[in-house]
Amino acid sequence: MDELIIRQPDDWHLHLRDGAMLDAVAGYSARQCGRAIIMPNLVPPVTSVSEARAYRDRILAALGPDSGFEPLMTLYLTDRTTAADIEQAAADPHVHAVKLYPAGATTNSENGVTDPLAIESVLAALERTGLPLCVHGEVVDPAVDIFDREAVFIERVLKPMLERYPSLRVVMEHITTAQAVAFVRSQGERLGATITAHHLMFNRNAMLAGGIRPHYYCLPILKREKHREALLEAAVDPSGKFFMGTDSAPHPKGAKESACGCAGAFTAPVAVELYAQVFDRLGALDRLEAFTSLNGPRFYGLPVNERRLRLERKAQTVPAPIDCGGDVVVPFLSGETVDWTATLVDE
Ligand SMILES: NC(=O)N[C@@H](CC(=O)O)C(=O)O
Ligand SMILES: [Zn+2]
Ligand SMILES: [Zn+2]
Image (cartoon, rainbow, N blue to C red; front, side):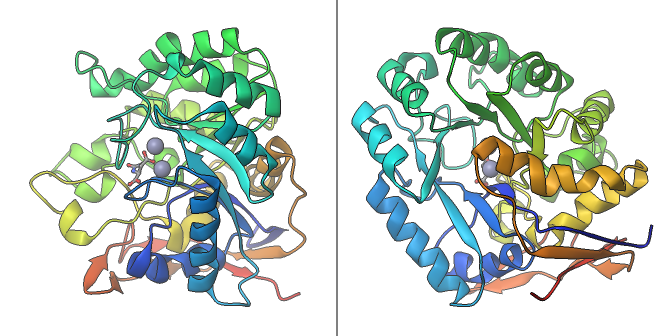
């Protein structure tokens, strides 16, 4: 197959940032995706419906009037979030989920939740309203090895949470382990998961063997090969529980190429192409559309997109570093070649 036309994908986990960075990066996602779940880990974080609405307006302004892109907003949970905040979020047409960052787990998570099982009234309100909880699923316990933090989170936090709140709807974001794949499979429809392109493509050798490559550093951290293999099986799984979430997370070049580099891979410029390459090499292009464009809308209770995206087997070079207000952002795999080229089909 050298050409394939699929329903327009959505990105169920995306960081667009703010200000000059937002202006520089937003167009890359809008060129491919119809909608995206917008992560709220700005500085300061997006914690209220009014802040989410204002952020949504800034995203739409950055894109201009003809983008057709719909930002699906989320609220950042803190120790101070109330059940009333959740009721208000659930009633708002632009807020589609709330995000749980265990405090200290990842980039801009300092204001996150200290003890996820302690926010009982918030979890009860989520269960009552049906608003999904998106989770960065890693424990922050310094005694737990960084490569085990996701698997330990499932045992210590996610399992008890799903038992206590049997109707709570949860998306385990950016899963990276065989344990996460098995756990998502073991639960009913109310638990879904997103998978990034970079976790499907690479194991931790890509980051650490033959030199340390900071652009491969993201959280949860890349794992060993057997985990990547489990993710590949999940991505092509007919269950519909796994869907595309790029976790495209731009940072200034200097913050990544540093003695203490920050976590995040900016994959948006070629996101769908990277997934296409993965599915193609698995001989599973026929499963791509379900993963990129059908499973996510089903989980979130939204219609599928009407537009179509054309994928051609036409090699392209991943863009050079992008200028944004004096800083530079380096796309993941910048300067390297990908096998596919995606273009939106005109309506
Ligand atoms: N994934 C990352 O490594 N970084 C994300 C935060 C996150 O999604 O955990 C970021 O905001 O930079
Ligand atoms: Zn995360
Ligand atoms: Zn993220």
